[in-house]
Image (tube, rainbow, N blue to C red; front, top):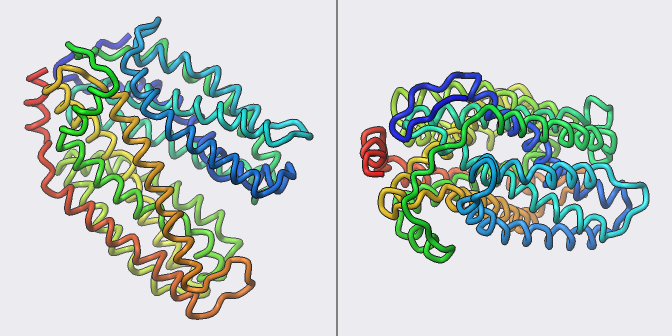
Amino acid sequence: MWKVSSRRASRSHPSKLILYALPAFPLAALALPLFVIVPTFYSEVMGLPVAAVGGALFAIRLLDAASDPIFGWLADRWNGVGGRRRGFFLASIPLTAVAAFMLFWPPQTIGLGYLLIWGGLLSLGFTWSSLPYTAWGAELSTDYAERTRVAAFREGATLIGTLSAISLPFAFGTAGANNADGLKAVAVLVAVLLPLTGLMAFVFVPEPVNRSTREFGLMQSLVFMSKNRPFLRLIAAFLLNGFANAIPATLFLYFVSGRLGAAEWRGPFLLLYFACAVLGVPLAVKAARRWSKHKAWSGAMLVTCSIFAVSGFLGDGDLVAFGAICVCTGLLLAFDLVLPPSMQADVIDNDTAVSGSQRSGMYFAAWALATKLSLATAVGVTFPMLSLIGFDPAQDRSSPDALKGLSLLYAWAPIVPKLAAIGLMWGFPIDRVAQRELIGRT
């Protein structure tokens, strides 16, 4: 076992970080099918009515959002075998693995109740697994720079898991909505790897030191969180940047098909984007070490804005230029994935120093809610805007004005919220020196 000090930790051995990061691979592999593939699979392949599937998934999303604060609070209060992070995470794995297998490999004849039951259970299981797991990583080290390495290993594994989920349908020759074999492969992958990697992490990665001296109820915890100004500033920037990223993510398939006229390149471009994000992880770590987390993140967002602005000028056949944009923005995506979670651990220190209670579970629950809110807001804004500009994806060819409007929405609409996020983060108060002082007060 590795020992973790409650004060400044030494640089962790890579084997420890790899073992901690391993469960992120199957968790990411199930996340993409759950939110992207399942809706079309159950309507087009399993034959359930589209409206009914939409209603069922909406109910599942509501359950998902409501479960975040509950599991976050439970993750901070768990006193069972294995510790409040390792033990609570390990306890979640059977539900998550079984529900993923059942949802991704359904019987040939099912009803709407099957989707509701197993989709709801998987949503609960995924939340239950994710919150103590990310809180575990946030507490593995009290060192400012080391926290970035921990997040980098985890998010690198997350990106590789996402790439695997994208690639499996192609490997089975079933790319597209009707990827039954690819979804079955993901079912097996998650059912086997999640218990295996989860158990390995439980056995070989230590339970973090609990620096709490007091405990609070759910409402008291929320009150303290509302008074944590660095946290409010960070989560506002995260919400704005997440909204900015979600706009092109929502429109990506339409942009490549409609504006570039290259529907067959949607999969390859998506793979290129996430593959470059994996390569960008060490760049994010080095940038944060050289400058600071908030300055490195702000710089990456600023460069992303300038690169994305160029995509608004692309048209039919500009595949090389768009491929270059995918490479550059993919590299910079790593900054969005690695640095904010590391900074989240720092703002939790601020709360712990004031309240005497280390509630990483609650904070990462708020983080998860912000992620879901940004995605939902992006969908709620972009689709009415598509209708307003006259873009109809069902048409073989939209009008030039509609395509121009799609380009503006895809490339330039994200710039405003990103600039607002940069404004919040540029003078962020917790740097290496401030974080070290906070640790000294706990």
